[in-house]
Amino acid sequence: MDELVLFYYYCWLLWLLIYFFLPLSRVRTVMIIWILVFILTSQLHVSIVAVQVSLSFIILLIGTLVLFGLSHDRFYDLMISFICMISYAGLLMWEKTAPVLFFIPSTIIIPFLIAVSILLLIHSFHHRMIVVVIGLSFGQLLYELILMMYSLNDSIGNYFYMNYLLMTILWLLIAECIIRCVKKMIRLTRTLLY
Image 1: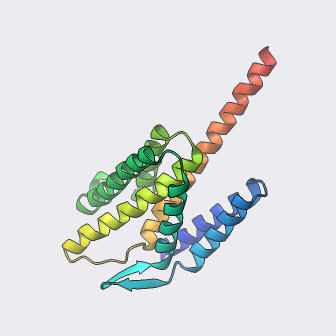
Image 2: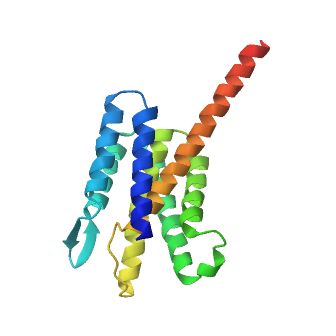
Image 3: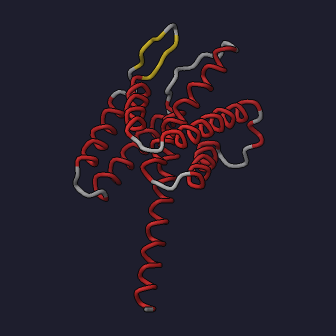
């Protein structure tokens, strides 16, 4: 139940940030509609070969793959997505086998570690968002396939995954705001000094 509340909280927080802080444009409108469709389809599941897959997971994955296809630096982004996928699946497996090793709740530490690695490897904010969604989506797919080998079936695209994804996006958004504020402060101090 907590995952559902967190999911709605993160989605609406992201929706509010986009609605009030992005300038009016076609990109803002598409992002707002995309989040609303993500919320609406979050409770719908599709059965594919005896595996439950969330419809919002499928929509999110198809949308980001289209955005990935439109990006310029595909090979580098693909490599970083692969790193993100392996690290996400590895951290989830580590949490499953040795939960004592996490001294901070996993809903905070896993998105934070993924966000820091993405921040260090990619400079463009839009590419960060595309890479994190693709990496976490395929990481969730890999994690669920590993669990299926041990007959521990769970639905692909569940609320745990969505919370990890939305928390990672919020960490990246906070980092982007801090980076932009620091750049503005540096520009302001340069103009005052010269």
